[in-house]
Amino acid sequence: MKLKHLSLSVMIMGTAFGLASTQAAASGYQFGSQSVSGQGTAHANGAEANDPSTIFTNPAGLSRLEGTQISGGLTLVVPHSEYTDNGSVNFAGKPTGGGNGGSFAPSVVAAPTFYLSHKVNEQFTAGLGVFVPYGAKLDYGSTWAGRYALQSIELKSFNLNPSFSLKLNERHALGFGVSAQYMDAKLVQSADATTGAAQAIAKLNGLNLMDPNVLNSPAIQGALAKLGISGDGKATVKGDDWGFGWNVGYMFTPDEFTRIGVAYRSQVKQKLTGTVDWDFSNVTGSLPGIGSASGYFSSKKHPSTTGSVDVTTPDTASVNFFRQINPKWALLGDVTWVGNSKLKDIDIKQDTKNGISQGDITIHQNWKDTWRVSLGANYQYNDAWLLRGGVAWEQAPLQSDNDRHPAIPDSDRLWLSFGANYKINKQSSIDLAYSFIDFKNANVNYTDACSPAGVSPTTGAACTGNGGTVKGSYKTYLQLIGVQYNYRF
Image 1 (cartoon, rainbow, N blue to C red):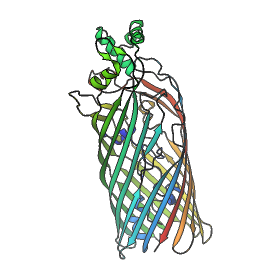
Image 2 (tube, rainbow, N blue to C red; image 1 turned 90 degrees about the vertical axis):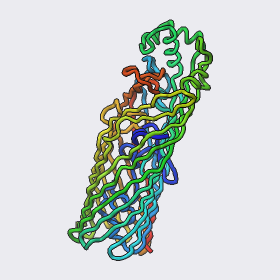
Image 3 (cartoon, one colour; image 1 turned 180 degrees about the vertical axis):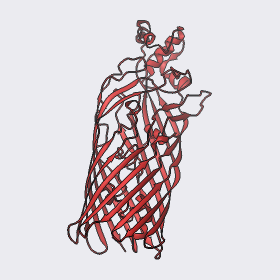
Image 4 (tube, rainbow, N blue to C red; image 1 turned 45 degrees about the horizontal axis):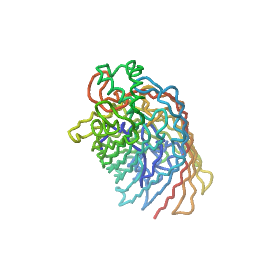
């Protein structure tokens, strides 16, 4: 299936290298940690370039690494998120019923990283990075109040990033990399067949099927009860694809104690292709003159088919610095811009099946560009231990509560990170990191701009959706626990 804009990440995406999954820890669908050593300073370390994970932050930093080095890390993500429903309604304006989604976030997940560097000569250093760039995994279940917007979502991804650096002289270095990025996505959403049946009955009787007063009238509601129509359908959307991109970096070293870095990572365009499977086996009753409601929806309105969504992951640009103040203390900083404003509506296209053309599933996002500002410090405690710490503020891409979808209940957040590097011997060391990420309390007021009848109530165009509004609030925080092993040959 093919997603349009990572936004539909909003409807179909999760996380993983090796395909482990987790709730995203950074803005939008970006995963929050591609380096345990970087996590220790809240990712203020873009210009530090002390190990091969500089491939992700700034490939020009490879020029600082001697010999052959490897870094392999594992980050455990421990999410905590609570949803409270504040009056979600269906297309007809009636309460959807159901609960708050229970423990919809996973208890803990793991995401690995791997980096390799090799100094070819005094000017040229090559490397390879493998990391998790994006992800999300949430499962609210089939009985929660917002099920017509989402039951569950899982996005898995990993990125292969071969890179190299060119050291021009003692002050200037350039870096370049290419990326092969894989995504695998799955979305499950309830289908409001009961309201769809009410619209079908209204149409058969020449009534306005877009008028909530008509749909809630005693005549229509009585007909639904008499015909025994109840239950929800279910749509399952799956898709995957490879995409390709690039990244560049520049590092300026004005003196032996100072480094300034600039880096850019491109968009990656992907077309996720796969299936859209509809299941109405839990829908009961029959429609007058039509027959089985389950059969009507599965064969006449929503036959299972293939589909696609275009996905474009956002580009990023960073400026960072490193300053060794004295033998004990170093100061680090980073400012990163993320080009999320390109992510507007997401259109999931369904291919024609048995002569039936279904409208697109459209999710509006209206995202904005975002910023992350990080400040960190290193303290050389003794020959064996380097201690780290950092804070960061990061924006969410959402412009209003109306753009917040249950698949990505994102909000502005604050990072507090601590870390350490323990030098085992001349060849090897271990990095440890802990981060607490506090999300600003967030409200959701998301309205689906379609109707169960498959027609937009405002434009009259064909579409696929449930209508209705998810209305509630989220309280979220995350903990990241990372360990990384480094070895120099």
